[in-house]
Image 1 (cartoon, rainbow, N blue to C red):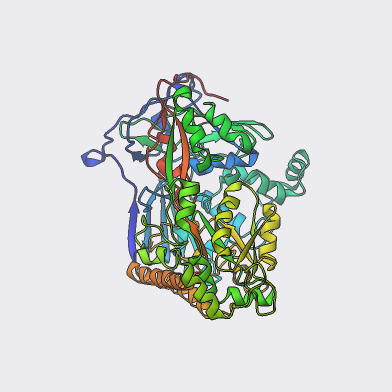
Image 2 (cartoon, rainbow, N blue to C red):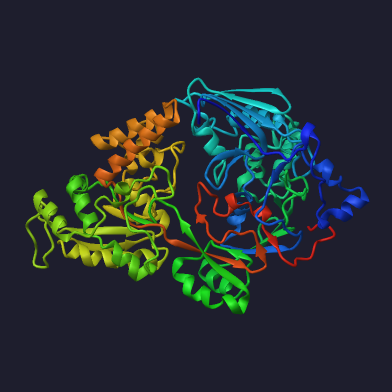
Length: 635
């Protein structure tokens, strides 16, 4: 963030502050308003709602049907709804959403200004008390948060000072910059620094008598009050119909179920530029289906909007059903650093393999021995991007050298590098031998969840064999796969590339440094950092140390220009060191959209964070043509 700035939401007002638009009521709610059971829309909205201009002004009504793989996917209502204190727009700029404004001073002091009159989905006021309750009674309560506030709220291990000067103002104040704060609030899985205090106090020992709390614990069959509190307060899980919401839809179905219903939030804070309170669509229906049959059910026209559970290899099948079932298959570009990448485990337990994988010449050689063009043509019809696991052309940090370094097919240079290392002896198969005499049989482990990874590895196998490396594939269940990596049992794994391939200088570069055990190329270094040295291994490779130093420097940078320079330093290290071997990127994600559903972009990116998949495209503005407006509230 800049040294000092103010983020302010757009408002549509006449000169002098008079309201320029008359608010309009969704037909679904009119009966309740007429009976007096629900206030009219003008009294349900904040004094200054967020005014958005949709691509096309929509009609009210209808049900949006989509498929999920299990009850846990009710969280997609939080992801897709994408109502955040602050959120990304389509250019990945952070702007206020639930908040009316944010004042930022030096990335150290964040003054959050709430919308006057904003209410939860049950009609109760949303105020600074909900932030105070979270900070004092949840984040700093040892029973509810044994580890204390989350890492996004700590700077150099220190928490912020939090102030609540009035009902619509909250101030977070750190002694040093915290550039992670706003991005965490805008995430697909957001940092939630408020809780609906009026609802949750009944489950908290500070606000409820011991007898009443014990009765609730017994009724709900919970272990204790803290377990009960954490169970009913998990907003991201989106599985408690009683928990008041700020999202465009609120869930009304309790698990277990194979069909979950979410209905419009009558107090949602956004309106379109003609005063229609959003969302346009009355209900979202989540139908549970086995992942294996999601493509078939989608191709049969059973959904209105679907991307999860669909893969590029489903495209031909889905395309064949377009006319018959009245939908379109759109292809959105994924923007991970790579769709698939190889991760040499620099912390593998085998000393001979550890030494070899840490030799940059070996990593360059195996990268040069991959025919990315063949992978693209054979599996992705030539529509993907060929290059390393790095930033993509859509990022302002992109330089062709980052993506293309050591990414051409050059078997001659690969053989030369392997010879230079000293791997000149071969066995009867022509496979090179390690210094200890073992053959260079390189096992690449997979999570075994689909055939795409193994299809790609078969092509890699063929070209690696030409330079004397024999590739073997070892599939296992995801949890086993991850634990083997973390423990150092693997030599190499295949997985998706870096999550964010389109960063700006203001995005954290921590994913490109050994900051987490989830980094499959350096899990023990990441674990060491995450645990403050309690477990894992300290970094003992100069280039990896340089990445950590740069990451720390980014956190303390005082300007965007300084952060940009640090990013390029990090990307240049990756360019030279080839810590991961990107295989293919920018793979297209099929998105099936019924022809009745409007305002869904024809061309877009599909990404988890930033992006929240559909979230940044504002599903509250999607609408169903010809949908009947509902005249009573659904339940």
